Length: 134
Image 1 (tube, rainbow, N blue to C red):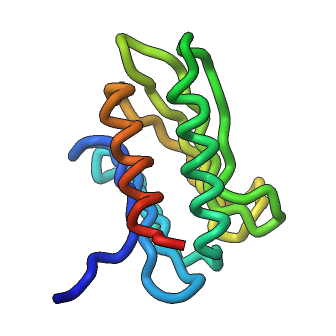
Image 2: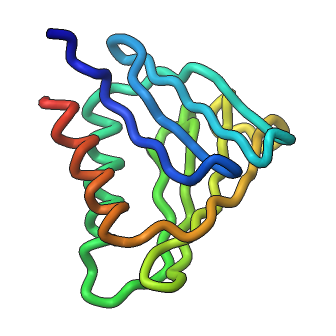
């Protein structure tokens, strides 16, 4: 039996973002906006960094009152992804800032991901944590 690699995918067919483990300390970061703007690159991240990212997302999603938040995958200079969330209609809309070369302001992709239900987001983050099995 083959175990699926840890992953999280946010968005719909028109606008999406995916973070998926492709090997030990190797993660694929991919995004697409209406097939007009896209990014697809490999980032060096540990399972612990990704688990911490999911935990920080969950801490905001479990808050009794929904509020704006921003979460980077890792605080280091090699950070490939930052998500800023805005509460919308019982869920959150995201503004994603992808940086293939780490904290590089000249080579990046910014995209928006439409509202996602808060319960669905919690389930996705919990599934990512469970799949990491650290």
